Length: 405
Image 1 (tube, helix red, strand yellow):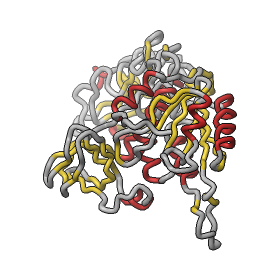
Image 2: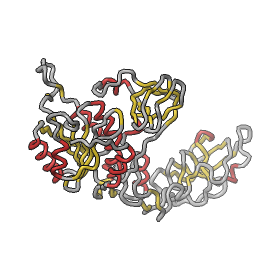
Image 3: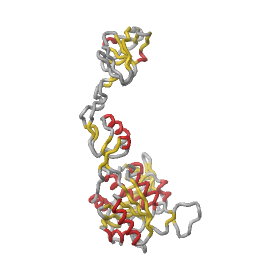
Image 4: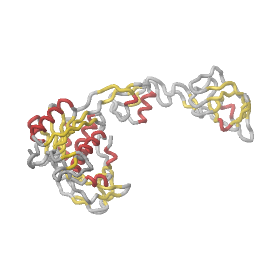
């Protein structure tokens, strides 16, 4: 089944967005929260730091007592105590007194600055200082980073290593995040065989799509599982039906065009609803999507490069936003080194090599040539309202790295 009128990419994306689903929420130990998305606001349980603390090793002193100290005019102090990180001193610092203090240790009563050890010499309890400090110098004040009760992170924040530290400092040992979607990848095609060093039958093709599709799903923060369904209507229908009862999203590869034996869309139509099939894009025109038992199913091409491009066009955004993380193409402007032809009414995703200034499309661009994706680091995107670009025109570029979870 193939609809004679091709949808625009914008309309296909809108149809997917209109049927966007979200995953449930789960609570995980903070050690497992990296690269997840917050499903709650983070409110600080503690001040951080919880007291005025030293930001370096040195001596806690009254700053005013140090004024005027220099190499030529040193001043004398008396050491009355020493504090390690995690300890408090019961002593009060008075005029011309000092307490040895470690980085992170609480500032003792009476002191209002820390003098770096490098600017001193000592002989038992006698301290000679050769520099001055100002009040508050080398002190991290209480709640400098976080104030108790403060909202420090908002729901839907992507948790990087930086956020891990902030969440922990706020007092959380577990955190609520969106669950990773479980994605079933159904590979169709009787001609496909597993990778092997041995000679393969002339009518067979190594099944590379299973590896690229699984990796793209995982690069979108989701969990992938693969099955092979063959080419019959019954096999494909059964695989889709079974997956729709267990998984959050289904992706098929192959069987989406209008040639004999392409049965994926027939099975989809029999089981549920087709949202679209056939989009005015290059590569990957026969991409489709639908709903079965309330689950989104994306039907991708069997051609490897077309399948990868289709995933980036419509699938990646859906998986990101299932987990509460907004996704949009991060377009950058570059100068085209070559003429890039296109035609009105079609959106082109042209494989390209781009640097900080220029972009050049990969010349060998067949939809089955996997090496072209390896040689590229970006897409030049040509809008459906443009007829291509001339050499030295400004083009829109999306780097592959910007598409990753």
